[in-house]
Length: 248
Image 1 (tube, helix red, strand yellow):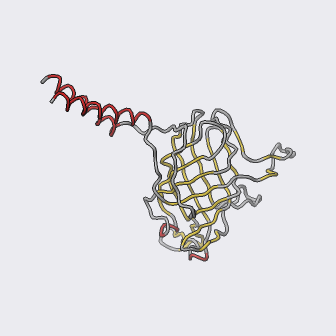
Image 2 (image 1 turned 90 degrees about the vertical axis):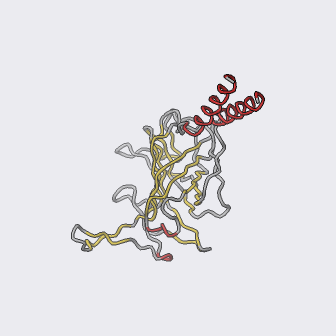
Image 3 (image 1 turned 90 degrees about the horizontal axis):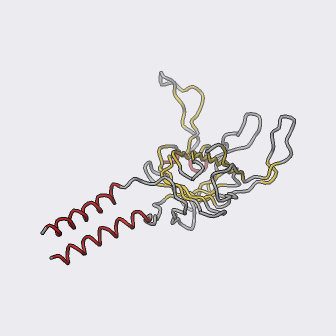
């Protein structure tokens, strides 16, 4: 009787640990993402870099939905006076071991073919102040995966928060995004950059001379393989159930 109770308690603890186990922020493996063949966001060429613990990505992008390719116009320049239109911007705080703590996705611009020309910004009195909010999509990072060895891809999962394009990307839905060309060196312990840089100018700044980097993204639920720790807990619970059955 005592042995039976002990096995029952072990089984309950194993199952409880499975559901209460904290989510690991480091994943030295792909998530992996299971995306449609036809992505709803296509971006590139992209400037992809990892410096001072922050992974940043930016570049032009287009939408593809309703069977139509929609060009995103305008965008934000990298620096005032230096035109470098960026429609998609990703930023993630990642330490040298690949642990991420936060991250965001932002898509900006206008999509005239889909009627997305920005929402007027109102002042405190509710009057139009002459400017428009051109935020198409905004989301927060919920998962990040990368290969153990040098190479690609890098994978992200974002939850949509708001934006003009929420009729196609509903608030609360998931966006799985794959960076297919990043020149990832296999380590977050060093700074890296996927662009070949030219000779420094008078101020020591370098200009990209060879753009590279592509990204595809698709709205959908990622397919996630259980982590080894979760599998171990599942196995412990099953063993407990088997032992309980034998005692009976």
